[in-house]
Image (cartoon, rainbow, N blue to C red; front, top):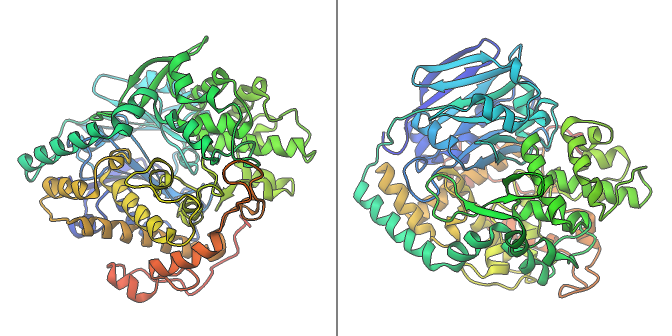
Length: 603
């Protein structure tokens, strides 16, 4: 095969055995790789009767056809499983070097099943796949584990204490400080007694047309250089470059989404990070953008913080102490925590404390308590034991679910839907819960890429959101970084995929693959018992208008947009893809659930 390696490896931790098998070329063509391939395999392997933290759940690590080809940002890979935080289908992807090395080990998909009796490590190398004892690593932080296993030519993927203790907001970390963050995949890895996976490989990826790929890469490079966002803003200030922009338009959620502007935004901006803490910029393998910040505080050095982390520990918690925010980011990386959910869950606890619902010293603005709160979550100490379950379970425990800013149980990222109407629709309909990477409306609603559309416009947003969702699913399956798509059109990604695989993909066919993947994920969630009533936002955003600023008086107009969205998707009024749509997408073998299977405990 060309582009794909054509091989999957399955490791059963219960028996300690592994096997290799060929992947169906037609499955690869239809679902591409990465997120799409992971969703297709998960459909067969994990059904609605499987508890996410049981041995029957699986972890599926997938590379894509562009991974390790030297196309821009082609270092990425994904993990898929059933989420222990939300109960939805879950995938997360990451950069660094680990994914490139997994592909060079000759693997498109690595499937981890079962549960080891003792803490274990999976080792993938030229000699094959082995499962070794990792008891001596259990309890170590991510940097300690990485250092213990690191060797020349080998990359390390592992969990920290948060994953070991089954925190539902635990991340899987690779290459030290890269995160497969959202939805709790680290808890799934911990439930399997799997501490780490190391990988090395030197197999070459066969390219169908190297000259054509070289030309497409050259053209893409020109577009990345010409675009000020990818050539100037991201390299100079990192992702936090947009803090001030989002704040000015009144879409920066503050104090657990009670407000939409943070009065001290300048103090936590990308410009402030650069001025105060930046050591150098860094990049993933084969990435010309180099948006990563290597920073140093008074006590230590590390990567980050990114925009979402700055917001989560900053504006969302009412904190303007940039040093505390940066060190909270380091701590999340050490312990293996999703920084978005961690910060947002702390913000939820702060509001509950201020309202007298819980007895805690946590209050908005209490930077002095921030690091201890993160540690307590990572090690499940004190109130951190409750917070490690995520904000929805925590708030429900105190009969205050309305103060959890989540969709389908996943904490919302750093954009207020009352000031970005399309972003609200995106959150509500995202298959893994509230997520900005599922078709981020930042480009059209804020930055003007590819063109600016009115932020507060309601009608007509459904089609834009759905197209962005389809494109995001395709990009996550190639797998490349979505920042490339901020400058490089879908057409060039389709041309790159054609050059690598030798399979002709037009732009429409690439986006159709994204639509196919999106619908399959929808079917998975329907099979799990989700329905239209889960495509919603927290009541605060639907009923409590913004009190000041450019969006004063606005709430999210989700109900009007949702009906239009279902029509645009050609789904029925309940959000179920009909048989005709499934046949059109080649999903006719997937049974459409006749109704809800069971009432979920998440309610």
